[in-house]
Length: 431
Image: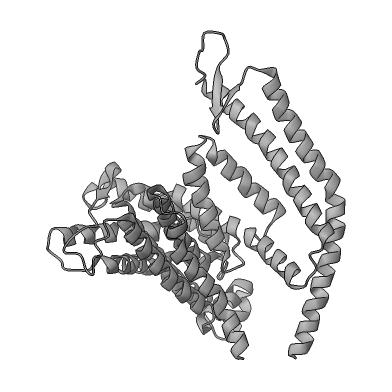
C-alpha cells in the first residue's frame, strides 16, 4: 500500500520539480513570458477537459468564462491601484475564478438543459453573444482597446512586487499546481464518477436516481471556476484584457489544444497547452503560415492518433514498462521519425514558397529573382531547383513512410501482445 501511494505521488513530484526548474533552464525574459503563457493555457485546457473528457460535453464557448473572469480580475486590479479596495494581488486569480463560477451559474443553467450537438450549438451562440456584448458596452469591457491595469501596486510583501516576470511565473505555477491537484481530486469524488456515468450512459444514470442535467450543471460551474482563475492569471501576466478573451477564436484554440493533447488522459491537456502555445507564440515568430501548420497538425493527430499525443506517450510508456521495446522496434521508430522529418521539410518548403507567392510580397532584387528568407535561409521561389527540392523531400519522406508502414505494424503488433500478456500477469498477481 505504501509503495502504491508513493507511486501515485511520483508524477506530482515530477510536475512540481518541472515547474520549479523551468525558469532555471530558460532564464531569458522572452522564455519566462512564454512559460507564463503556457501555465495559463494549461490550466484553461485542464478546466475545459472537465467538460469534454470527463463529461463528454463539447463546448465551443469555454473562453467566455475565462474571459469574463479576466475582466473581473482587471477591474479588481484597477480598484486596488486607486486605493478603493485593499486586496492582495496574489489572490486576484481567485476573484477571477469566482466571477467565472458566477457566469457558469447563469449561463450553465441554460446551456446544460440540453446535451450533445444541441449543447455545442448553444455554447457557440453564447460565445458570439458575449463577444458582441463586449463591444457594445465599452464602459465595462473597454471596447476594442480593452482595459489595462498595473499589477505592481502597494508595498512589496516579502520582496514580492510582481514586477519581475519571474515572480509572475511562479505565481502562475503555484496556482496551476494547486488547481491541477484540485481538478485531479475532483475526478475521484462521487461527482466526478457520476459525471463519467452521465457521459457514458445518461439514461442509466437517471435510472439510479441522478439527474444528468444537474450533474452537467455542477460540472460546468466548477469548470468555469478554474477557467476564471486562468483568466485572472492572464490579466496579471499581460496587464490588459480585451474582447478577444471572450471570442470564438480563443474558444476554438482551447478546443484544438485539448484535442491535440488528448482528452482521455488527465495530462493530455497539459501536453496540448504546451504544444499549442509553442505553435501560437514560437512558430508564429518564424512564419506567417503558423495557423496552417496548426490546422494540418490537428488533422494529422485526429486521423492518426485519435487519443491525442497523450495516447502516444501512454502506449510508449506501457511498451517500455513491459520490456517490449527491442532494438528492431527502436530502429523502425527512428527510421519513421527521419522519414517524417524529410516529408515535413518538403511540405514546409513548398508551403512557404506558395504562401509568399500568394501574398505578392516578393522583394525585387533587380535581377528578376526574389529571394525569401525562411528560417534563416534565403530561398529563391522562382528557382526550379528550390521547387524540385521541395518535391523530392516530400516524395522521399512519404515514400519511406509507406515502405516502413508494414514492418512497423508487424513489429508494433508483436510488442503490444507482450504488453497485454505482461499486464494480464500483473493483474493476476494483484488479485
